[in-house]
Every structure is written in structure tokens, then in C-alpha cells.
Image (cartoon, rainbow, N blue to C red; front, top):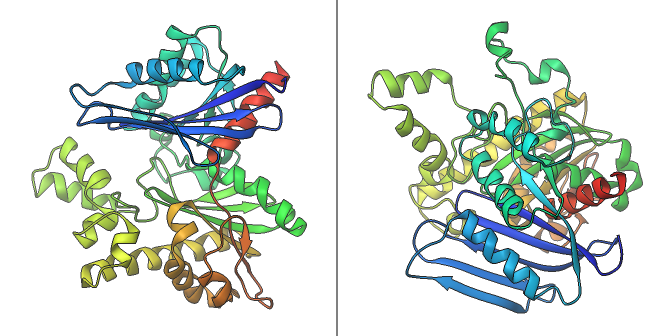
Length: 397
């Protein structure tokens, strides 16, 4: 990869496309931006350079655009703002890779067709992840594309960590624990040893806390267990997702309340979590600023569930050397970190209150000097992880 070559990373959701541009073999961040409100309302685009300066902005007020039109616009924008750069590949975040994709893959029509078969496992995410891939194939077929899967890092977990206690005929259909946020956990595992070499072989629980939230137990950088399971609605309460739920509740919703599948899906994915409990907001910042008892209850429930899962994951590891906070909430909520660490004192966690209150930017240790368990903040950087995977695939090709 030459100095003027670049890699573009695409992270597509149901109503947005985020992109990042990385320069040269060092993968220096150069541009990032997003198109949001696809399909509905006013679709907006904004791009900024690494100094935060706006280098592109547009809106579509009369007619919102879809993923294909959004990708077409991004390709045109990139071509006019490359400043002599050459795009050598595009890397995509793809939520689900099933059991067959345990690492990055070059994306061609065959692989995309195989991934299409996994849509029933992630119907709210995978179609939107694949839409930009198809658009790139149609609009710029000469550019290699690499798929990076959020499930891949968890494929190597012990079989008992991946299995539900269901009949084999059901398990064989692919009903198992997959785990997600794998790209974030990969980045954390790669970044921690640079901050403290001893963490390369440590027993670590990482908490990726944002609108989507999960936790992962890692031994020497390898995933051992995770809170998310068959879908990304399992585990911790999230912004609008309920987290772990007794399956009997779903049966009750259907049989006693007469809810159909679509209504149950909307309830569990869009109307629950912090939003559902508080009745106010899915945004932790709004809840922390509120005096409403329902906001307090939502935060308390999330802290409690993090503590429960932390104990479970520490048991899966057979001990705990470090706890890592990441994601929007993990990186920015001083109060939540303090509450979680307070409840984890039994594990040997002792927070440096002043260090935590300073709310450090970047990778930082926030535990007291004598804490048996180190506590770190590691900002999420899934985009860089995707760029690294994409570069590696190019070099191996």
C-alpha cells in the first residue's frame, strides 16, 4: 500500500451510513462522516477532517434517499475529495457472520449470497449492512471489498459457552449464542497491551456500553464468553433494547396480550431498555440530568445488570485482572463507572475517584494504585479495526 493509497470503512445501519477514510500503510485517519435519516424525514450528510473542520455538508429535504443513493453520493463525494489519493479497498462492518465466517473475508457475489441466508438471524441489521456492499459492486466493481464480522471474535469460545439447552435439531439450524460487538473487543484486546504489557495475558472483562451494550470475557485477548447471545437484544439493558428476558414473557405477550410477532419485536428492540423503564429517554446523558425517579430507576437497573454480568463473566474466566469501559456511555459516564466499580469492590476493584472524575480522553487507567483489578477506559474504535483487517486482506491477496 503506497503513501497516497487509502482505505474507506463503511458502517451501515438501518437509517444511516457512517464512513471513515484512512491514509497510507499507517492508516492515519483523514476523513469521517455520515448520512443519517435515510428513507424518512430530512436526510442529512456531513463530513469532517481529523481537525474537526466540516469539508462537506448536504441535506435532502424534499425526498429522503435510500442506501443505494446514499452510497452513490458517498462515492461521488470521495472521488472529488481524494486530493490525489487512490482508494484501494472498502471495508464493511457486518453484524453477523454465522459460524462459517470466523475472520474477515473478501466480498464477492457468492459470499454475499451466503450472508443473505443469515438474514433471519439478524433481520434488523444484516440487510442494511449488505445494501452498501451491493451498491459498491454495481457502482465501483473494480474496488475490492472486505467484510468484517461482529460475531467472528466469539466463534472460538468453548462449545458450552455457545450452546443453548435445546434439542440438537434446533441447535443444528443455527440457534446458538453468537455474541456481538466483536470488532470493538478486538480493538480493546489489541490496544490494552500497548498501555500495559502485562495485560496481554490477563483475564479481562470489557464492557462496550452505548445505545447497544454488551460485555465480553477475554483471556489473553481471546473471547471466552459474552452477554449477547443469539441476537443483539440479549444481555444488558440498552438504549431501547430490553436485554436478557425470560422466554416466558414473550409467550405471555403473545398468548395473554394478543401481540403479534411484529409488535413483540418492536417492543423488545425499540420500546424497552433505558427508554422503556424511564419513559423519558434512551440517552444516558438525559437520564443522568433528570431528577425523575423513573430515570434513577433505569440507571440503577443498568448498573445492577452490569454487576450481575460482571460476576458471571469473572466466573467464566476463573478470576479477573482488569475491567475495561468502552462505548459512548462507558467512555463518558463518570457516574455509571463509579457505580459499577463500587458494586464490584468484592472482586477487588478500587476506583481512583479523582482519576475517574477527570473523565480522561483516550486510553487511561482509572483504578487506584493498590486495586487488585485494574480499571481502564479504552475509547471504541471499530473503524480502525476494520481498516486493519482490510489492509491485512490486501497484503495477503
